[in-house]
Amino acid sequence: MAQAVAWLLFLQLVLEETQVVDSKLQIAIKNFRTLHIDYPMVNYPEGFQGYCNGLMAYVRDVKQSWYCPKTHYVVHAPWKAVREFCKYSESFCENYNEYCTLTHDSYPLTICSLGSIQPPTSCRYNGTLTNQRLYLLCSRKYDAEPIGIIGLY
Image (cartoon, rainbow, N blue to C red; front, top):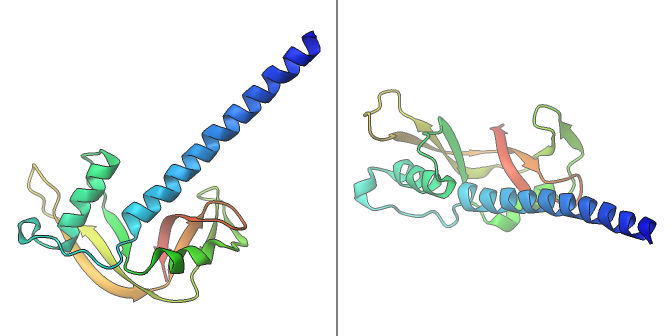
């Protein structure tokens, strides 16, 4: 009886840890889709003073952070098209401790960069619309989902 109880406690600890890891991964996938995919591209009202200022207000709200990120990439392509590139990610990026891949195709994207001169109460961004290949972080090696953009090519 004691052995069975010990076994049940062991399984509960292992399964609970797995659920926590899986939950964090699901949040990372959802955040990627919410914060890095904007298709079709949203038009923000004039009061935001440009696409990147509107988008970064949204990003900071979702992250619940007052911190002004220096750079943020937003892809203007369907989620399904971007997601395909993480289905087989053979490379492991040690710096990020995650699997990663380079997309075969170029995608339209906006690079939002924090301006050099900032008013003390807000973040002002400049936007650059470009077409480039993406270095993606993937949730695992096979049948994965994108969880981050680590660079452009």
